[in-house]
Image (cartoon, rainbow, N blue to C red; front, side):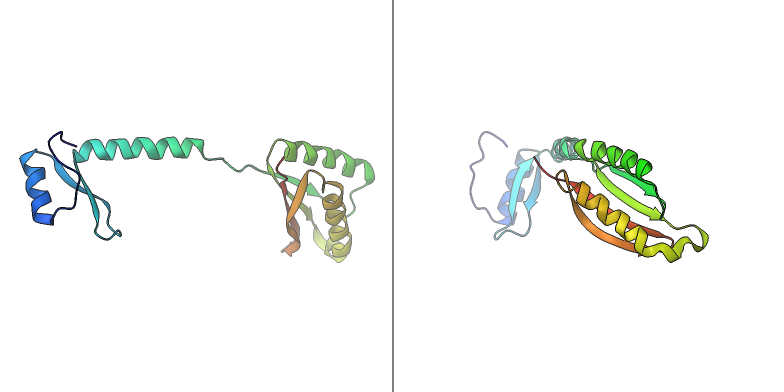
Length: 151
């Protein structure tokens, strides 16, 4: 803002006249405020600064990673333990976990076994993760989401 412009409430015409005299632009910062908030500045520079701010905020935003673990309805104990270990590692790294049981062919008759398997996994991982979505059948898959607990 120019050195000789005082902060205050000006009419639209007055603000435009001041902006023209300084060879700058009148930029509306907050249109919903009453009265609307405007600044006298160089518009191109304002856009550049705003893009820079948006880019900085975007880079600081956390990116949610979703890791998947697939089971069969009759997964044996060794495979279950192996996959549970991977699930623990994913949750400790801060990733969200999508655990699902895939039913091939006629194995859909073992829906209960798939649900029991996923609920067992949720119970085993309850210290490091919490269930975001309970087991739900979607087509030939029964899916459950687990998110890591905050420290």
